[in-house]
Length: 112
Length: 113
Image (cartoon, rainbow over all chains, first blue to last red; front, side, top):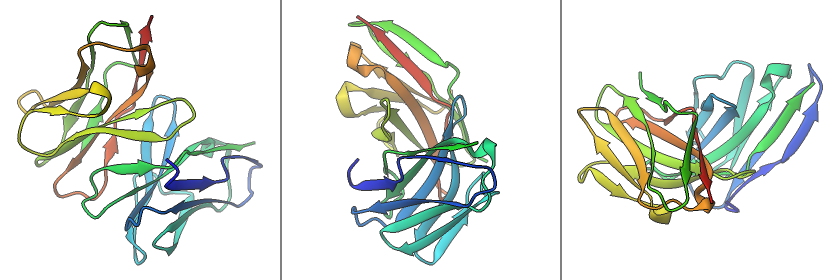
């Protein structure tokens, strides 16, 4: 969905490196989310933000941090990457009702 | 806690036949239920949702889903499958008191010509 963009789309990094994944949206939504997708595990919520000052941990936040720089931007950081953080990462947005979510195209991250 | 189970990793169906992708859920209150589809190298796309009202919900691309409260199920259905329906399907749930969705593990639908 072109309304939600993620950069980079692919990234290979080494263990111990700091990496930032960025998400931008033009839908005007207040709510933004970061998920990771692993085969057989579905999507698991890392962090979510309901506005610039409202940031919450999801079910798997350890090893990750986030920054909501503006309504339209929500970044995910891995402070010290480890191999089991190799996954597909998705950003999503939703309106105030929190019902229908709109997903970005994903970032494929490989930690060697 | 809320949870979702998709008991089938993969569903195979012939083109033109009806398809069903199963989902069961567990929530402490009234559920909000969703189906999303993921095509290769793409993000998830919303298909349909159940909030309240009619137990049969119609969504995009001819899909529908039936909410069954007694069986805590929300199965996705389509009367006649297309090869282009082949994708990964996710069920998700949220109860009225929580702030985020919980997704199932996904079911891969393969429609054979």
